[in-house]
Image 1 (cartoon, rainbow, N blue to C red):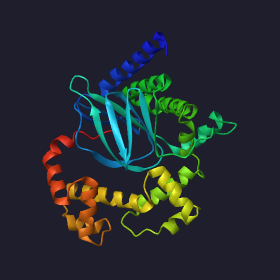
Image 2 (cartoon, rainbow, N blue to C red; image 1 turned 90 degrees about the vertical axis):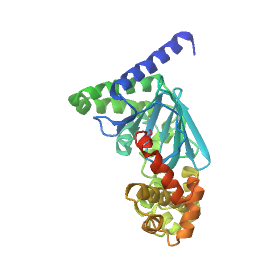
Image 3 (cartoon, rainbow, N blue to C red; image 1 turned 180 degrees about the vertical axis):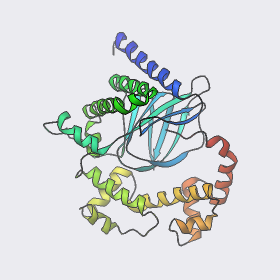
Length: 313
């Protein structure tokens, strides 16, 4: 990249930072007028992993850096790389670079499968480029065109009428740029109903809705029109987990949420998320979160005044 292009790229990111700072006056998460668009600000690196399920979306860091853990796979992104989630996946994340003088600033834009489907024939009228099967999370170099479009999109949030009438046009521009970029084939699969990615996505949606019920992998495979062996292979290729492992992580995350938000004890939370054995729940909880339930929840409650302000994006 020559000097002029480098300066242009820096100025585009600086413009995005300036625009985001108007809407993020303090640490926290900020929902914009446009549904599915969220901004985040954090003024220090976080040591505590933030556990949650991420849905299909574009995540871009304008300032700072973040790491995301999907099972054993680590994904890192900062001002030079953006991240895309293609299906719902439970992850653990933390902000790794932030300070009061230079806070972490990021945005998330939900990706609408229906709109991607509608744009696909226009962007790729002769068919999609081939892409090897990969994880639900992809990282690619930041493109100046996307940064500029996101800057304009956030600017439109200052007016309710602009957000309603003009913002969807800029969202289409961002989707088109994504579909034409290095992650185009992966983003396109979000809108392709019969793609392997979307078949896995349907199974994931079922697991999220029925996480507290017994799972028959063969029945899930039949539901998405795959053989049991092919389904297991593709599910693990996308999520880094088997269907049963995926369900276990969902159960543990929900149990943790219940204990924090409803004051349910470990035994009650375990039963409500589908565990028949309290001892099994305690063992699996400790392996996943690093502490047994009682100790973990006590530790989190002590930190809650801070952590509640630091919902990450």
